[in-house]
Image 1 (tube, helix red, strand yellow):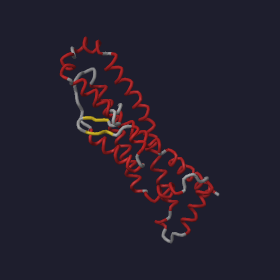
Image 2 (cartoon, rainbow, N blue to C red):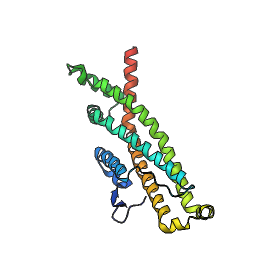
Image 3 (cartoon, rainbow, N blue to C red):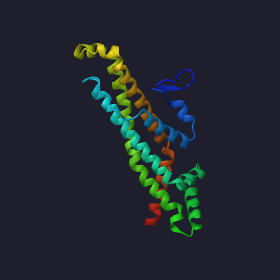
Image 4 (cartoon, rainbow, N blue to C red):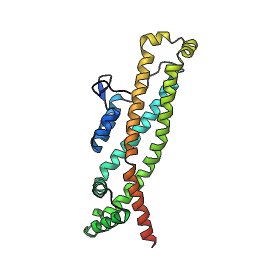
Length: 218
């Protein structure tokens, strides 16, 4: 979706985060706002036509799944603040330097529950499933966007011939459901991109996992 001249995307009384705005926000604000916008747009199913409904239902399913994935990621981040603070503080360091920082940190912790290494490993394990699902959804979002655009812009005559949708078009119902699907795909993409942008940190945890496994085996 394209923002207006003020850089704002408006939908049914809501100001929806644009891609440019999302990229400019601090990571925690960006995450919270995307989830909020998705919940404001909502998850209600709208039916208008036997031809269009399967497409919009597919969009809704993708939207719901992407909301679930980013919500899981948000919960995980909320539960792993120490890990995120540690990784961000040591961002840019080599694998060996990170390992040394972890060992140094843990050496100063008398209680095992305060040590960073187990938290980092738990965080990495939790991200695996989320990351894999996000990659799958990225492909589905791209495909659904193409199908939606093709159906509305290139198949109008076919739709009218098959179902006589002129009344619906005149009533604005098809346009409304198209806009709803469009904003859902837009927000799903923002959520997908957020998790994709987190890949660098996820990769760091994977490196730490491999190092820890090597250390244990050795």
